[in-house]
Image 1 (cartoon, one colour):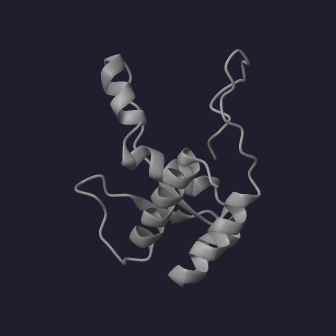
Image 2 (cartoon, helix red, strand yellow):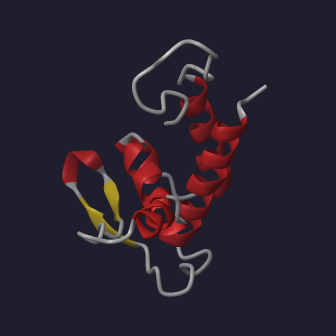
Image 3 (cartoon, rainbow, N blue to C red):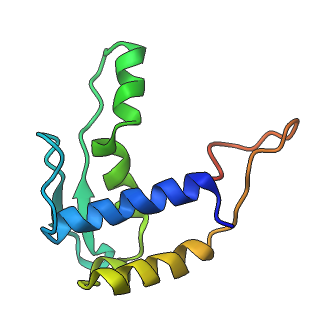
Length: 118
């Protein structure tokens, strides 16, 4: 069974694909934008952090769809960026995600960063 975080990340990536392919429009005025980056494929642009903002605002920014979605999209291999059929994209995305090891947090064991995320 896939991990919960992985499942959420998968849905976010699928939503970003729909925005990229104009199946749906971008959320409010977050305006997720895309640019071609050669060998890295189509990269999504995400909003930068505001210098000197309150910590609560930084946290809200770092967990927002407009920030997390593009960051996850940019982790994908370029070959996935080129898939234009939704069903095929879902299958290829699932195959790629299954290659990522599931490393849930273990009480008493310290790992650097959030190692159970893409």
